[in-house]
View 1 (tube, each protein chain N blue to C red):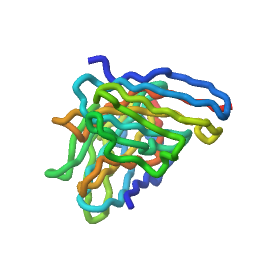
View 2: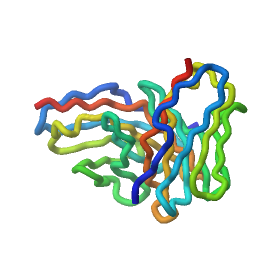
View 3: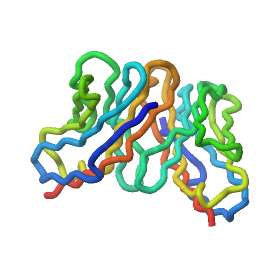
Length: 114
Length: 114
């Protein structure tokens, strides 16, 4: 069965510091991995994806994520956090063995303090 | 491109009543998804359409739930005999044939069953 775990309900970081939001997954076949962000009173927005190729993928707003197959992880990172990055972040996975069912994690709330 | 739209944005109904939600995807997006999101959780997959064909359906979608996409454009999600447990945010997303991995989400319909 497919699953996604985001072990931290909340991550706190000071503005200008690097941030990491963790995600691990379980899926049949090769994973398609995604990060989405949800700002208050706004819909989910796509940030980045890993389908194949380089393990480090870059996305919107300066975010990047590293795919680690042996650790089944896909952690979201940013070198220097901004207050405006404060939001709810969701990791999601889909297997490549057919079907379009995407499984989302429970989300991690990121607080960036000025 | 006006994005994915959903109607209504909010719906309050009494237990036992039927409700119907509408989703208009981004024009020319041939893939459409419905999700349900409750407080503190990530979106849960409900169903998926490719054009007018409903190709996947979650076991979460009980017999009281039905979704249609009659002409491969807009979609409706109907809940019959609503229960208090149906209270949630219902999200619609769409994706294109060319970039089918990235889903674009609508603002959601918040359902409250009293």
